[in-house]
Length: 223
Image (cartoon, rainbow, N blue to C red; front, side, top):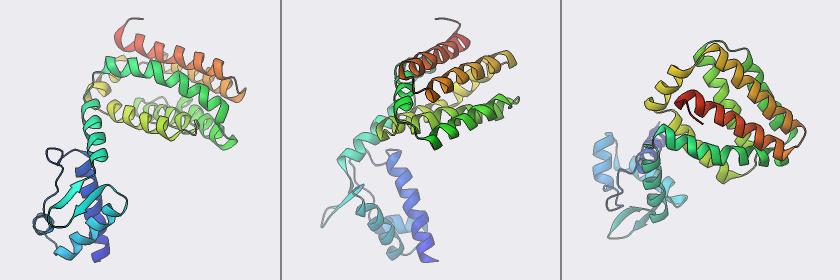
């Protein structure tokens, strides 16, 4: 049981670090204080902290305390700032990033990657409820980024997806959603898939660009 508790505390601490809770001076509370916060023994907290220290996320300095690694703290600060960007800023970034991701996926995707992307497209085509379509649409784009075989691009997509999960974005999409638009998006996905299957990088980039432009028009009525 202590190992399970330590694992839960480790997960909680990692979330708090990522959220920038200790960004001001980078210093985590002492083990005694953390033990009181979580209602556990100090040894349990110590195991959780040691697990995080082992991968370099935090650094322990004898006599000074435990500090968030400066690079991790800087990244947490960036993530905090970008998650509050406007839907318009998000679309501008997608117009730049997603066509290039599609081009790279056309070059690097494995057969299983392509099959996963096609399955997401197939499911989205048959999903007539907004929530079902949104889930498969999200997976379509997520699997395409994974198919780039580029960890940085995949991480950038994860950040974009965090922004897309915010209320402002969700409400904007709900207001613009219609059955006709769902069919249009699926047709645009089909064009991306066809280019991926043909290993046509330029075609994949152009098909994805047209798709993101269509989303921009649906959301903001401009292009």
